[in-house]
Amino acid sequence: MKKWLVFILPVLIAFPAVSQEIVTAERYMETVSEQYGSIRDFESRVVIRSGNTEMTGNLSFLSPSFLRIDFTRPADQVIVFNGERLVVFLPEIRAVLSQIITPSRRAPAGGAPGLSLLRRNYTPSFVTGPDPVPLEGSPNERVVRLRLVRRNISEGFRELILSINPDTRMIRRIEGRTIADGFVQFDFIDVRLNQGIPEMRFVYDPPPNAHVHSNFLFRDVE
Image (cartoon, rainbow, N blue to C red; front, side, top):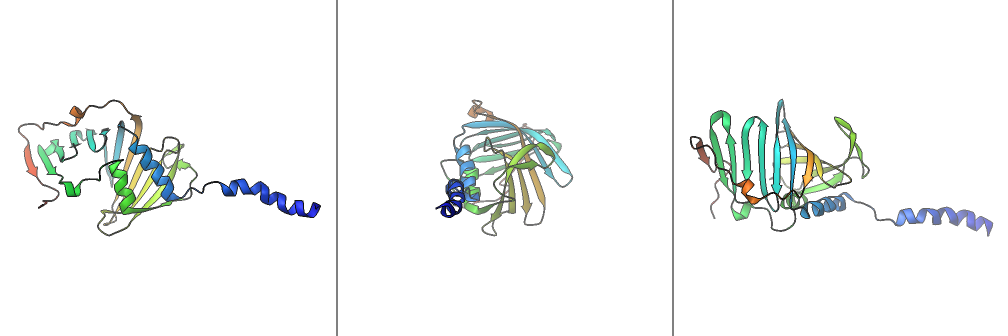
C-alpha cells in the first residue's frame, strides 16, 4: 500500500493542473476578438513607425467600423472612415484622397470587424507561449505576443505580431511585415474605453481649396 501511494500521489497532485483548459493561440485570439466585440468605442494615442518615419496622433473608434485619426505629426493630417467612405487629408500638398468602400469589401457585420478579418485571414500562434513577457522598449509593461501568418497570398502583410495587454485583452502594439519585406509598427497608448463618442466625430469636411482624388485605392465594379 505504501509503495502504491508513493506512486499514485504525485499523479493525483498533478492531475488538477493537467485537467485545466489548455490555452491555445486560436482560443486566445478568440477572447481578444470577444473583448473588442463588447466595446462600443475607444480612444487612444497612436504612434506609427515605418522605416525612419514616425507619425503620432489621436485615434477614435466607434463600433462597428467608424475610425478617425487626427495626427499631431504630421500636423493636421486626418484619416476618417465612416463605414462606407475613407478620406485622407494630406495638408502638405493640400490633397484629399477619397475612396468609397463597396459592400463586397466591407468587414462582415457583427462583433469586431477588424479582428474578424484577422481571424479569418491569418493563422495565430504564440511567439514564446501564453505567459506575458516584457514589451520591447517599455520593460515595465508585460504583454502576450501572438504571431499571425497569412493564410493566402492576397494579404498585404505576410506576418503580424500582436502584443496584447493580458489584463484588458486590448492590443498594445501591432508589428507588420509586408510582402515587400517592409516593417510597420502601431502602438496604442492610454486606451480609454466607452467614452460615449458620437457619430458626428466621423463627419469630416476637408478644406474647400484642397484637390480631391477619388478612388485612389481601387475602383470597384458591382
